[in-house]
Length: 56
Image 1 (cartoon, helix red, strand yellow):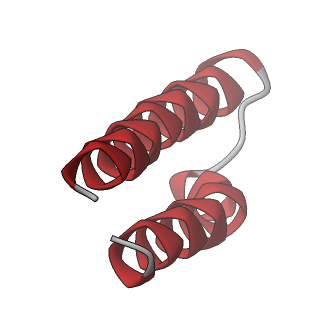
Image 2 (cartoon, one colour):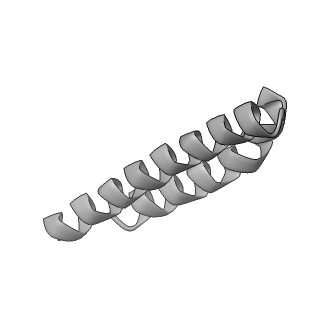
Image 3 (cartoon, helix red, strand yellow):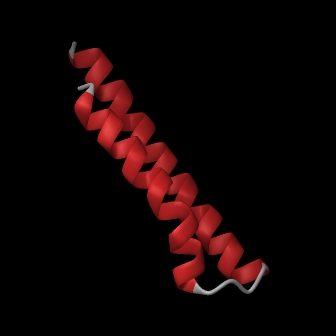
């Protein structure tokens, strides 16, 4: 089970980094406000981490 645990955690970390980069891109290129990018990115990050913790 340890292998599955590490895979889910690594996936959650990768998704978190990707969402941070997307939020940064939206703020810089599309002049979105910080709260708008958080509004779109935060739910995805929270769901991924909840699933990773639940199934690990």
